[in-house]
Every structure is written in structure tokens, then in C-alpha cells.
Image 1 (cartoon, helix red, strand yellow):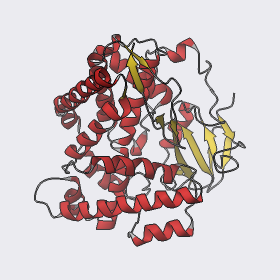
Image 2 (tube, helix red, strand yellow):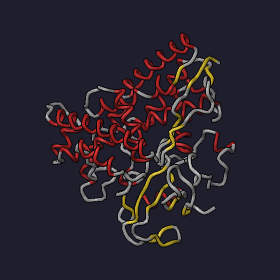
Image 3 (cartoon, helix red, strand yellow):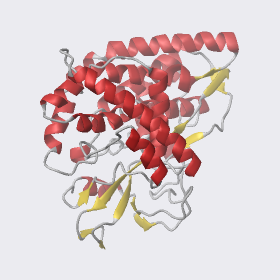
Length: 390
């Protein structure tokens, strides 16, 4: 099967996929390593164009997203990335492991108590939701506050920018994004002025404006924790489902938990696709790509849409695909100059949370084997993972 298709298939709320879809890992990696030909300028654009009314809601909040990090294709990108990367060095990630484990163990213990007292527990809310947000804020030198609102804002913003909301829903999401942006702007102003080291005053010293810091912070505060929550959620769902060759009791081993996380990263990560746009007429994978052509890159397995049929040798439900092993997962976090800066942190957090959850909750099974899933252009995960005693 060809690694590239022009997908003339139905999509939620639209008529067809407007992107040229590439699935072959070598081709995907090549695109990501050719930023001069394939720009990230469209990476954060709303999949469903924002209506005039939605734009006015955002404008009242002074909402602005100038290209600073993920969508920045200018010479300023490298310097800004270096500032942010300083908060996610290997040494800082490793030093955070005891804190991650403590948060995971506390969450798992509370989940076990709820399971015992109520007969079921949703692991998304109980163990996957909050630890990544707490860890991210602490690593950035920011206060851990308003977590329920941050989690709700994050999901709403992902849907606003990567979903297919109808007109009414888009307005609801725009109000949510505006509220998030107002909150974020106040946080930025507060911590730019703080004497303590934090991301926002580091970016200010790098000569970024308030609007530029808000733009970077808007998606970093979402991606830095919500995608990890989604990775944990999918991993726990597959573990409880028993479909990936590792039992619940085996996942109480840290090594087995890590193996399962890496398998999910390779086969159905929380960020299965990402976008690029051709800067100029160029050549790729045996064909000419005209300037302005929008491209969708499949980073890992994407099971939510009609174009997502398997393109590797094995079908998606084969024994090899479902068996954790040395499956490459290098594209799960992107590649090249825009690769996810929090990749090692996300993998560590997911492995630790899965390990501690499996160790604390004994002999559970899925109560709902067919939950509702988040299915956005570039994000996927089960919304709930409800388990009960086995």
C-alpha cells in the first residue's frame, strides 16, 4: 500500500481530509528534518476555521498566538527552544523521579481506597489527570493552582484547535479558551516579575514580549501535561483490557510498565499525527509537492479516522502489533528541530504512574470495554478507564 494518499474521505464536520497524508516512517522523518522545505507554520492552526463570532470572543481576551515554538519557522526558534529546553534537561528530569513516584503512589493509594469503598474507579480522573500537571508546573517554576480548570481548559483548547466542533460548540470552546488566556496572561505578568527562577521570566530575559510568552505558554501548559495524561490513560486501558500481552500483575514491575508504555507510544500514542506545509515547490517520496500543500504526518498508529488503515506489513490487530517488544517509537515525539522537549519526562511519568497503579490496585478488570474516546486530528485517548474488582 502506498505510503502517501490524498485522502478523499469523510471527516467529522467536514467533507474530506484536506491534507496529503504520509505514513511511511522514513518519509515522515525526512519531512521533519527538512524544515526549509516543510514549515511548521500550520501546526497550531484551527482545523475547523474559527467563525467571526468565535474570533471576537477571543479578541476580547486579547488572545494572540504569534509563532514562537512549535509553529515557528524563523531564525528565532533555536534561541527560544534553548531557553525552554533548559527546564527539561536530562539531569532535571532524573532528579524529578522521586517526586513523580510520590505523586503517583499517593494517587494510586487513593484510587485503591475508592475502588474498595465504591466498587469502581475511573483511572483517568484518579491517577492519570493530575500528576503530569503538578510535575510540569513545578519544573517550570510555576505555582500549582487551579488544576481542575487547567485540565478542563486543556481539553477544550485541543478540541477548538484540532477538532470539528459545530458552530454552537465552537463558541463554547472559544469562551473557554478566552478564560484560559486571561488566566495565563495574569500568570505570565505575575511570574515575569518574580525574583525566583521560572520559565516566564527566563523568556522575558530572552526579550520575548508578554504576547509572545503567552503564545508559548498557551500550548506548552496544555501539551506539557495533557498529552501525558492521555498517554497514561491509553496505557492503563490497554493494560486493563489485557490486549497487549502484559498482565495487570506483571505491570507492577517497573520494567514491564515501561515496556508497555513504549509499546503504546509506538502503536497509538496520544499524538498520532502532526502537520506541516510545503514552503516551496519541492520533491518528496517520488512526487512533486507544490508550495502551500498541507501535509499530515502519521507519527504512530492513528485509529480514529477513515484514512488510518494500517500501511505496514501487519494488520493492526495482528499478534505482533499487539505484543510489546522492541517496536521503534522514535517518531512518537516528533523528530528534528521541533522534537518534543518533554519526551523523556512524559515517558518517565507514564511508566511510573502505570507501575504504581498496577502495584496498588490488585486484580482489576475493565467495567466498560468500549468507552468514549478523544478523537481529534492529532490527539487520541480514552476519556475514561473505569475498573472494578476482578
